[in-house]
Length: 153
Image (cartoon, rainbow, N blue to C red; front, side, top):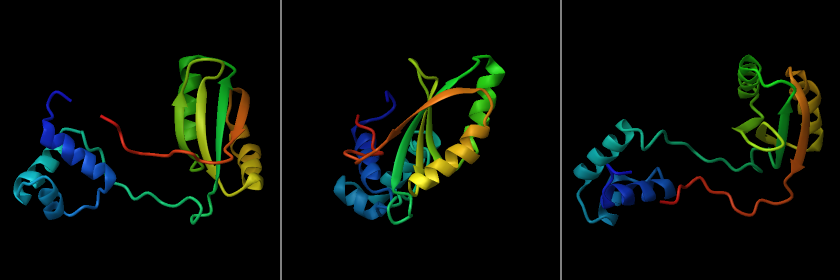
């Protein structure tokens, strides 16, 4: 962040709120003209501060209303075992986030499915086919209290 000034930070904050904001409107909010704002955004993209732009979809409307966290413990911890596990879970579209964690489990998976029957199908026909899974712990989300994609800085 040492390469960012106050204007860069304001640009990033506004883009986190609405990445679809018009350059002219953003410039107006920051009391600048469009050209320097455009140039700053392009620099922030080139330097990797802005990785990509996405559309956030409504899970319910997409018929993926069930959020499940699944903690996974591997049987072995050899490098190739972990690499193979990562390769296999990245290929599963139901898994929308995956973290290598410390503690009782090795990985935490965030899974989106339609309902309990869909989760059962996912476990029985996809997750259970991955080698070297020792055991799992499933946590079903009853309600989403806070969900944000914005970084606080």
